[in-house]
Amino acid sequence: MKNHHSFNDSVILGVDTHLDIHVGAVLSYEGKLLGTKVIQTNQVGYEEVFDWVLTFGSVERAGIEGTGSTAQD
Image (cartoon, rainbow, N blue to C red; front, side):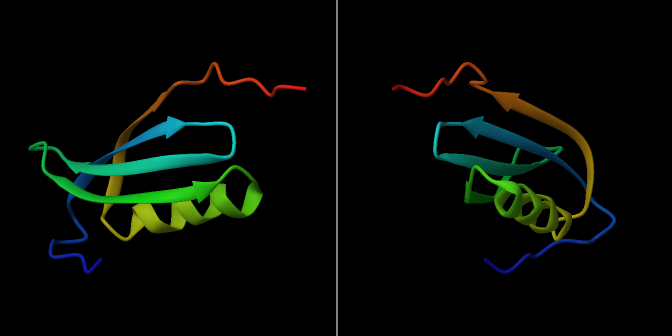
């Protein structure tokens, strides 16, 4: 996805957590969806989402939803 905005923009990151993947969404302060990304739940995935969100601008707020996932035996 090509970004069509200024790097001076402030953005909001939201993450929906799941057992094997997380889904990130970046919103403008006006509420416009700027992009989404699926990442793996490991160190590489966490670093990937941080690098990705910074391509949209300065992260002013972030929220994480669904942190109650547990592994099944």
